[in-house]
Image (cartoon, rainbow, N blue to C red; front, side, top):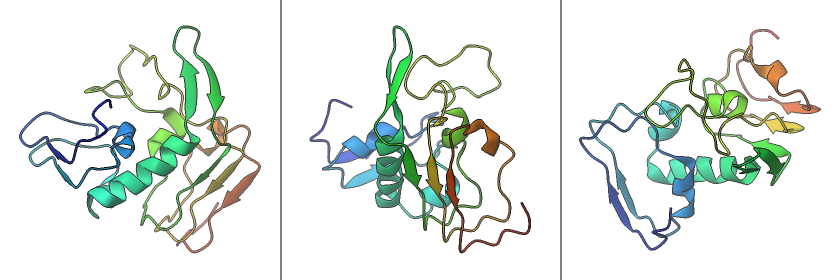
Length: 160
């Protein structure tokens, strides 16, 4: 976003499916509304706590997301760890494993996304999801091939 002075963002009554992670760059944002939109990203557990929680969640995501050279898709990571503690998550968000779908699209589409959200955070070596509401670890966990540390204390996991 180039509008870093934006204080009010009203997206009501549109067809927005994704509130992008770059919202976290709007440091002066006081009001965010998006009523009557089919938003699926970020997860409902995050959206239910208001725009401050959305911005806090996305700030953590942005700090760990790959920064890609679009032309060649060479990526460098800002951080190799991601802390998603205490967000009341029922599942680990897909952005971690699969990136984000094309704006307005889904992962089922054949057209790949060509930006920093194309591949997920497969570079992570540490993931912390402590004190959430997880009951199982996702099947996509093996996509994080460099993961050396997983912290999942304080959830309701019933198995591995």
